[in-house]
Length: 406
Image (cartoon, rainbow, N blue to C red; front, side, top):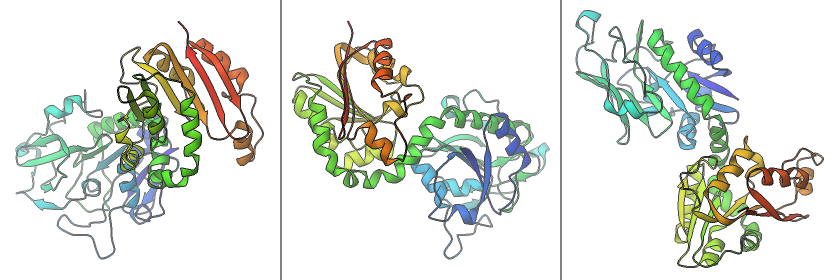
């Protein structure tokens, strides 16, 4: 896993960038804009992006014929992979044009002060950050930001100097100590103390989100074809969901729901007075679930399965397919699922193929340390508040049913 630095030309990333990333324990590699624009570029092994260049070589220039904003950046935005764009790279992030707004801000003596906006106080990257130092030079032009962009730093006459798009992409147009967005696309930014502090905060955020980033990067690209590719598994999902044996009016959760293939069966089980909630960490999978009509059967929610935004004891049944053994902290997940489950709540873990079949498919032997092996799963459930009620590891499916202990 690494942070990819996208810059105008091939070569080494600026030393300041690699130094700050290394201090946070993050590896880095570079891509030229040409390579990042290749449609075959993907997010495999990518924890975050830092964009330093733009295919537009002048503030007023439109892309040359055949040029495009890098495909890798577009994919990162869709998958909510953390992105930090600096200087000319902000044009790639905003996908907008720049226009002159007045005179160059000039020397420090007459330069307007950059200020953080109120929105910065609750921003994941800017919250708690020091105000930009008086010596920082604003970009001397205006960037056409998307309607949903949140402005985080601005100054008189030079708006939108820093902004956020969505929840995972930031652009900072001003650059300290000898570089700004009005320079050439090939100029490497001189970050200065404030810029290095911001980059350090970004590196910490990338490291903290690495688990979710990997999942979103993998599933976002596959979301559109997921339902059709695995449609043959629907009867197995329906049969497994029925093993929850929930009463009408119950509250059921499809955890790690993907496209929500279990939601129709859960709705049939709990009836019109019951509640069904599909939860997944990848927005693209939830969007696919909505396209396939899952909102007719329940609600969809983007959330982390180990930190559920649900009150305690509010769920009667949890259905989870192919999720637990992929989590870095499965014991924490099981404890969280116990927290939200009501007395005698049921947990059903499922996979439409058995452990031996999956191991053979990947060319490996069964691992004795596999969490889903009964001798590992039973004590894991017991330690987190669950009682193992049924365990099946057959050729054509894996299923575990557990009940919350009183």
